[in-house]
Length: 127
Image 1 (cartoon, rainbow, N blue to C red):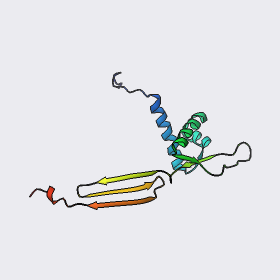
Image 2 (image 1 turned 90 degrees about the horizontal axis):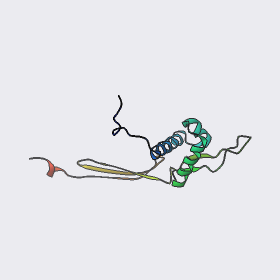
Image 3 (image 1 turned 180 degrees about the vertical axis):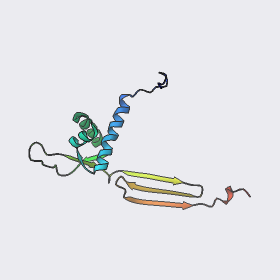
Image 4 (image 1 turned 120 degrees about the vertical axis):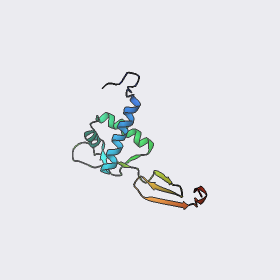
C-alpha cells in the first residue's frame, strides 16, 4: 500500500543527522568506550560521517575522549570515546493523584538526590 504524496513524509537531512547521532551515541553507551573506527564498523556509517558526528557530540559535551589513547602498534593510537555521564544531569518526575516524586541522576545512573511528597486527596473524592 502506498501513501498519497501529501501523506508521505520524506526524510530531510536534519532527520537523518539526528538518527545518525543517535546511532553513534547508542553505540558508545552500550559499549562503554569506542573508537571512531569501531563506531563506523558497528553502525555502517562512513568514517568521515562518524568523525563529523562525534565532533558534534564532543562540542555538546555528551561524549569525551578518554585520557589515554590506545596504541595498537602501527599507525596512530586509537582515541577512545565515552559518555560524559558525570557531567550531565537528568531529572525525572512522576506525578500521581496523591503523590509526586522527583529524582536527579547522572547519565551513568548515579542518583544525586530525590524527593517525594504525599497529599491528602479526600477533597477530590465524591461523598
